[in-house]
Image 1: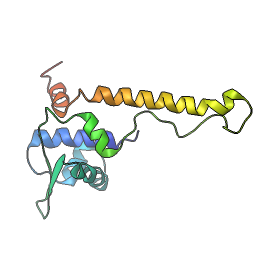
Image 2 (image 1 turned 90 degrees about the horizontal axis):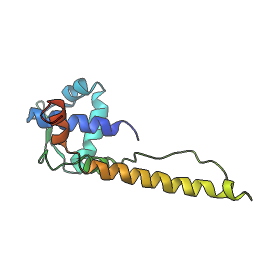
Image 3 (image 1 turned 45 degrees about the vertical axis):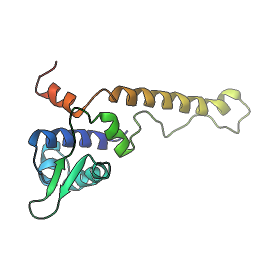
Amino acid sequence: MNSDFCVAVHALVYLNRRAEVVSSEELAKNICTHPARVRKVLSKLKRAGLVATKEGIEGGYRFVGNPESITLDEISKALDVRFVESSWRSGDSDMDCLIASGIAKIMDGIYEDLDKLCKDHLKAVTIQTIDDKIFRKNK
């Protein structure tokens, strides 16, 4: 997983709370990142229909939708996020040893199962859930 997911969730919670068009510069300042990074992440959210944009000098991003129904799983899908994965594999499928030749496939299955568990959990967490936790509405 990369930190684009965190940028996206932070931006959506902020946009929901502000309930108006917010520039990428203002979002970046609140998220503590660069405006170009915000634009890159939010372009994916726009394609998914989670934000709308306004062009021009007073342009920026606006939250679209119901914060009680937009889940973190939807956000992860918009960003094509994998939460559990490994870019390195042990062993070698061409080796004679069954452990060395079979472990990578087994571990890939474990990573896929764990990733699915993460995404299933995020189906129950909404933008409103995060907002409520920040503002102490539900502890």
